[in-house]
Length: 85
Image (cartoon, rainbow, N blue to C red; front, side, top):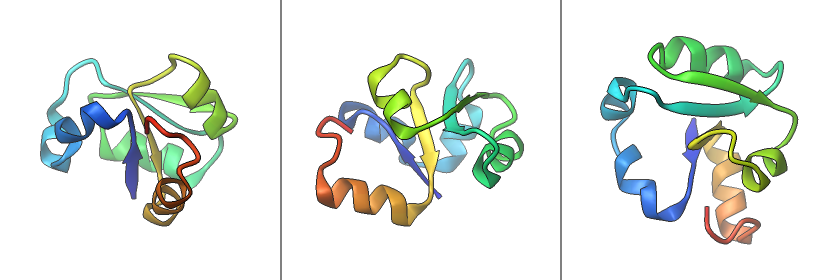
């Protein structure tokens, strides 16, 4: 599991323990995905926003982070699909 977020905020998400304590956090996940349900359990203080695609997250102001698989985040980073994330 990994969080995709704007580069300048990466240090805020360095520790899962800190992320779990964040008040008012909005995290996006793909609708009807296992990670959507997992995020609700993992981050009980956060609002989990269901989106249809990663593009919805990147182009909108829906959430502060996007939860995805570590492999997916790594691929997006390597390909620089979203330069500021």
